[in-house]
Length: 269
Image 1 (cartoon, helix red, strand yellow):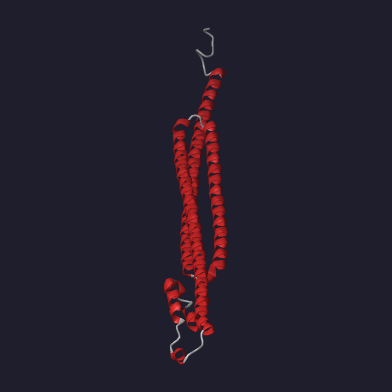
Image 2 (cartoon, one colour; image 1 turned 180 degrees about the vertical axis):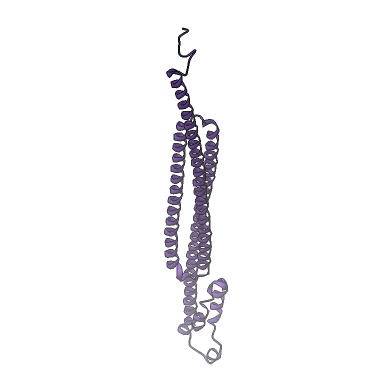
C-alpha cells in the first residue's frame, strides 16, 4: 500500500482519468442546464401562444355574437315594417299578404338554420381548440416534469378562463335563439290576427250588401204594389211618391258605417 501511485509520487494515470471524468461531468451538467433553460423557454412561449390563440378565438366569437345581434335587430325592424304595411293594406291585398307571410317564414327558417350552423361551428372550433390546448399541455407536462407544478397552474388558469368564456358565449347563443323563436311566433300570431280580421270584415260587408239588396227589393215591391191594384186618380197622380219611407226605414236599421259604399246605389234605385 505504501507503493501506491495515488498516495505518493507524481500525478498518476488514475488521478488524471479522475480529473478528466470531473471535467466531463461539469461539461455535462452545463449542457443539461442549457437544455433545461431552452425547454423552459419553449414551454413559456407555447403557453403564451396558446393564450394568444384563445384570445383570438374569443374575439371572433364575440364578433359573431355581435353580428347575430345586429341581424336580429334588422329582422325585427323589417318584420315590424311588414306588419304595419299589412295593417294599412286593403282587403284586396290578402293574397299578397299570404305570399309575403310565406316568404318571411322561409326567410326566418333560413336565418335560424344559418345561425344554428354558425353557432355549432363556433362551438366545434372551440372544442377543437380546447382539445389541442390540452394535448399540448399534456405533451409539455411529459417533457418538463421538473417544472410541471409551476407551469401547470398557468395552463389550468388559461383553460378555465377559456371554458368560462365559451360557456358564456353558449348561453348568449341560446338566448339569441330563444329571442328569434319568440319573435317568429309573435309575427305569425300578428299576421294570423290580421287575416282573421280581414275575413271577418269581408263577411260583414257581404252580409250588409245582401241585407241592403233584400231591403231594396222589398221597397221596390212595396212601391209597385199600389200601381197594380188601384186606378190612378188625379189626387194620387199629384201626390208625392211614398216608396222612400220603407227604404229609409231599411237604411236606418243597418249600421251607417258599414254601408258607406252602398249609398249611391240606393239613391239610384
